[in-house]
Length: 456
Image 1 (cartoon, rainbow, N blue to C red):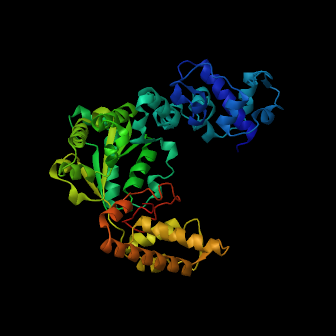
Image 2: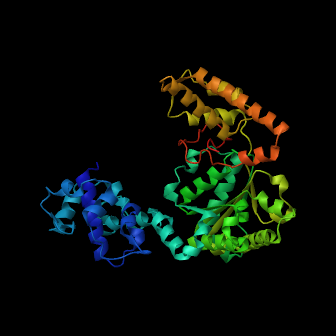
Image 3: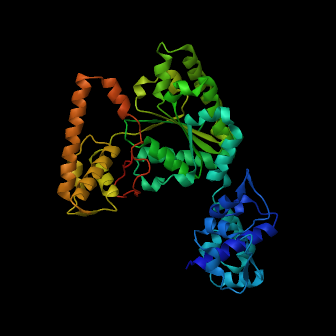
């Protein structure tokens, strides 16, 4: 069982062993330790353990107070450095108290003590440890290296997320059978990249997600990045026309350069229908050049050669022309949820809520045509309405009322679209996944072969 003193001693001993053994590298440090020692693109030896680095790595607010009673520890009052006066005694103390799974989760300790624990294998511990390229500190250091002050505007075009910043996993989402199958295939392709390159099969790893807004395209792409521990590079293609982004073709090139430098990673290109819209319009020649640059860049990026998984997403597949379609080797459909999917989504999103007489099937019957994102908005309104009455327990009637209110607002929006600027309203409502990208965690309900993302 963990305790503040155990956590701090583990940190100090890990740093001491890592410093002593030059054959260990960043992959041998748990991410929580790695980030506090990361400096200018690397972890430098020796690892200096102070009260501040110990607090940042372990979450213990007063690390010295936690271990000051142990006879093998000491602190330098001036520098704040904490160290062992007797490392062998510290090792014995730790090994008597630490759990096997905690050693297995720390490759440095596994390297030093795997013979002491029957269930611990160093090579497995290192393999399961999150790679350095998935850490926020590594991503930030690379971006700082790539962009000088004059190019900072480029970061308005590209958003880069570390896997640790993505809360959802694929297990938190309910997927259709087709979606699960396509994801399984791409995971296998990533695992066997060397084999695919060897047999000359390189045109793999470009997916196009198609479906209405709110059906989970963005959430699935992000969750895949979290599960595979890959940086997630997201770009909205309509942004390349922004007057603040300078030369658009240059920025498109830079986007792909970022992805290749961050590889292995996922490059997610939202609003892909913008490509076809621009190609068939009278847009400025510079914008058309940017789109042509984009299509050329897509042709040249490769999962097998560059370790970049490309995912495009569109709410309007009918706008895409043949030139856009043929750049993807797999099309993944994201439909609106049917009755069974809606019941699943409602059951999942309310998992942490207290709902009296909850009947998800009845609610599913009343929500035909709503997406996963819509259902989440319904639940949000029900919770907020209950809070105005100082209630944290919901009733089935609260959810029914929230559905009716949602449908009334939706009808008003549709009336405005008929009488006003329909295109503007559609554009405003078509941002897949923005409203709830970090929402409540949920797990797939095994009761249905088909499922649906509850988030967007």
